[in-house]
Length: 594
Ligand code: GLY
Image (tube, rainbow, N blue to C red; front, side, top):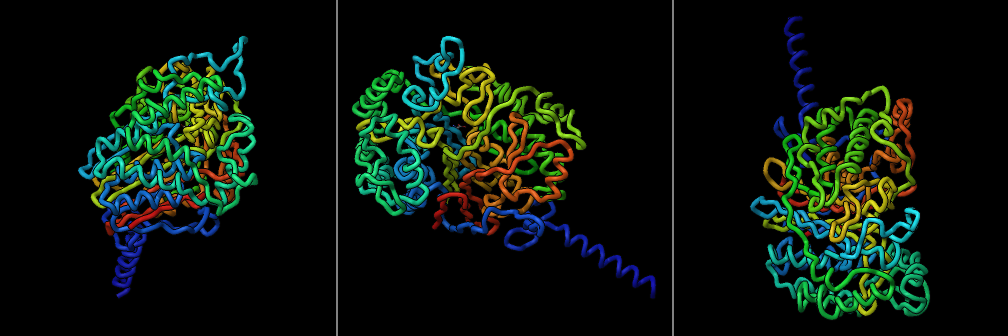
């Protein structure tokens, strides 16, 4: 009898143990053993999330972007019969109108597309250095950096790639006519858009700089009543409407040739810029072989150089693959420690190896290989933080930026698009093309303007990223699509300069390892390390006192960040076949589904 009680007890214990460890899917059903998709359990001692914003659920399609109007435009295009690519193009042009902070015609970016048949594509529509650019163009006679020259004003701009990029993806995949996908942006420019509080503030904060760069009497982004903007004001952009009409009627030639090109070149000449008609004519975006790399039983489809984002993301994920992050828990000291150490090593590689592959040889395969990463890990010691100086040296000022923008789109057929695009800084170089109504980028600062000197994100570069005519400057943008068991799973991306890569990395791990929903993973508090400066920044409350103390005792320098990290716009396919749109609660970002 006593023996039977023992056996029953043992069986009950084993049953309870197996239930406890069985992964559970978000819909509450248990999943098979190889499925890592588990429900996230919050640590009661830790503020895990920035907010408790809920994801948006859609049956047929989803657009997640930085602005509600732009997301609405994308969904309307899908309702008209357009696919995810049509919707992405319409969203891009709408963002150029409603979100001049980062949405753009005068910038560039990267597109990752997975079509409904599972074939992946990436388009590099990053800006290029003008033909007249040269390695030392931002240095004075003594070889010192002329402060601000690569950031503000006409000389800071690369040749814009965004319009060509949109034309290319529409030509290859679009279902609706070009005229139709352009129309919503034209309507928003000509009829006006209602400013959110954040946008009103952004325009007010930059008013003096707009005047300084564009002339005291510039009409652009000035309130017609000669006062500061407030939430609810209408922003009407007639010149931008005309430029969009030109693009609508003539496609790429409506921007890179003819009247708009004349205006752009005239503007450059006026302010000492060097972009010429020849630069515009010669600009073409490039289809590139996507990075397609496994992480556990997921496939990471992401951007090769000229963005460093894809290589770095795969390196980061594979560096921590060996560790039981789920068991250790979200933002526990061990989890954070190995993630920081991976970041330290990967950003050091970025500085050394990464640049435009059309100009330099980037050993992509080697950098992402597990053998290489294992070697990079050989000096890691749990007892003590690795010193970045041992990996390489230097000290640089702070970094923080959310001045890029990302949008994700998925349609009912299963086409998925993940695009990150930027002017670089907020409102780019602050140059508005007179008569054209659009802002120019200050992307030249993403080059290594002098070896070893940090750019606006504190990122250091070397020869691989030095300026050459027609070369693309290295980016951190990381538009990514994740497949699970051969099917679309997530479209992910964010702005954030150098922090883009780490935010995408953490968001993916939040879902895959910690079992968060897409929105929880976006809401989750984040941290960042980039090799140099040798310190970790974190969003307030991201770490418990216990985690902080443990990390500090091992020699980590850790600073609470005043601002926030990331402005994610992501979409996930849920186990029940619906889509979860997850837009960041840290700004105006909004998902719209149908
Ligand atoms: N301009 C920011 C980046 O491309 O990473």
